[in-house]
Length: 115
Length: 113
Image (cartoon, rainbow over all chains, first blue to last red):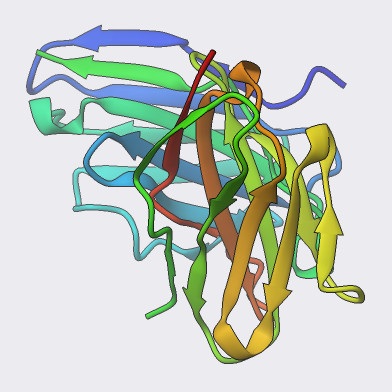
């Protein structure tokens, strides 16, 4: 398996534009997580899915952020409209099941810069 | 709310020094515990994990961690660090039966040759 695949690796956009980040989890993993990493706040959990269903989105900063998982092999994180303070590295991770002690596997991340 | 706290934000050591990074969590029930490492420019990778059994867990590259339930702690240790251990280290907790995975803020370790 190629691991968790995220695209794009880098995104530079202007304030006010819509940004869509994509993630392909490892096949067979039932859990998918979206994290945001910044110097100030570390690694924040934004939302996670179990079997394509959002379980906890309490970490999504505001209504400008939305995430979907239309099927087991694809998820998106959308920011509309984007703002400079959204600049960060966004990671997607997948896991068979953290409840059984299996770890999460991370993608390479998307570095987002909003100017 | 469930949270993970890493006490040291930035640690600087000389090669061969011993390392201990603190991690505490706030959750009263059963937990699964993890330590991840992020080398410069790379994604997070698993160092070690605790699910059940022996509270002293050994991981890759000579790292180990001890789960002390009474202290809600899962501290990471290494007897002798190397320059190649320079990285950011994250403690993570999966509380109870949620499947949720929460990370601490991370500790940046700089090892001087």
